[in-house]
Image (cartoon, rainbow, N blue to C red; front, side, top):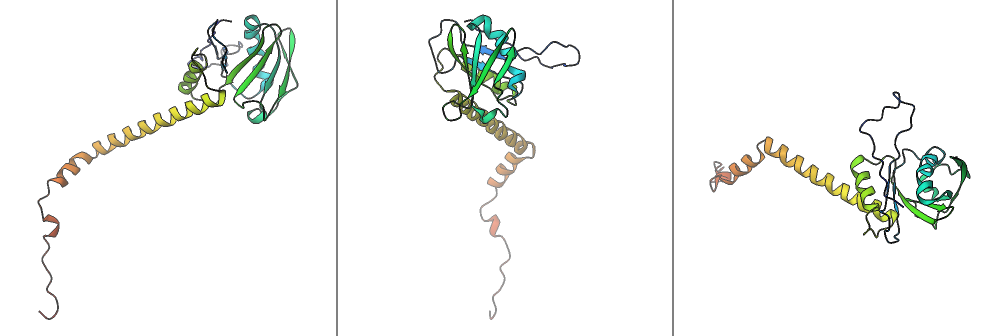
Length: 202
């Protein structure tokens, strides 16, 4: 097995060429110790009939002919029983309780079983790149869902930090710090310098 990365082009021009866009896949380095995940796949849709042929075409030479695939139907609206790929047919099955919803399980004709993290198609580029790198890291130890949860926490923290930074910039641009410093220099008793009102009967 070799590590393979197909980067997403900056702009996908579907009208200029009939060639399919490059596959977005990253695999663990060769000789890596067995782990819960063998890499990551970032499909462009949740259509297995459309997405599996390109994946099998790349993995067949690396892992031996892919004969069976299983998914968790939670995130796949349609699970076909068979998908034709180059020169053969891949049988597709599903397990809801037994299989991680973010994992694709592949059975090879000669080499056994492989597990890929499935990155949701709608994932932003930065998060997807992080997930692909983490899933192919030899030190990886998380499940597919664990990797997705970790990436979501990281993304949320980054967004929160960016939001705080933006609020601080707006605060500064509107004189927030100057106003705070000015109010701190107000003379003692300035808030109580009203003229006293006589009480009745005095």
